[in-house]
Amino acid sequence: MIDTASAIQTCEEHMRKAVDHLDIELQKIRAGAANPGMLDTVRVDYYGQMVPLSQVASVNTGDARTLFVKPWEKKMIEAIEKAIIGANLGFNPSNNGESVIIHVPMLTEERRKALSKSAHAEGEHAKVGIRSSRQKAMEAIKAAKKDGLPEDAAKGLEGDVEKLTGVYNKKVDALIDAKEKDIMKV
Image (cartoon, rainbow, N blue to C red; front, side):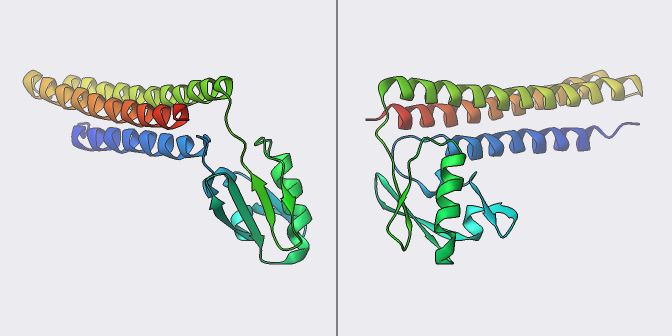
């Protein structure tokens, strides 16, 4: 007989991972203020190996519009500048001999709408993941019904899966709404 409890537990775990992944992806979408997380995807050539920027430098904010990248080794400044430009984040870094300075430009209305659209797309990806987890759990419940699970127990389990789906979809909507407010705030 199929273990429906573990199927529902797995379903919830996958839904939680979808929401956690969405949260990480939304942090990468720039809302206007400088944030060290904006550079999380930057990889730097460090002696022939591509490593995350965080392994060769510290990233701090100077103010709401400036990021400072201070390399552990001064000779890495040019490689860091090159990596930031190559990451296509829309930044034009400069350096003062000690650190790389990034001035984060103000967002135009058109860019805000595009960022909002990409936030909604990420939210839809998360919802697809949630629906996929729901479908797998429902299939496990149907298989358990065929193996002798009582009808009313199956209905109860299906109700539990639907509740989980609703809860995690609301979490996705809340994250998207919060990000959209953040993006559209001037």
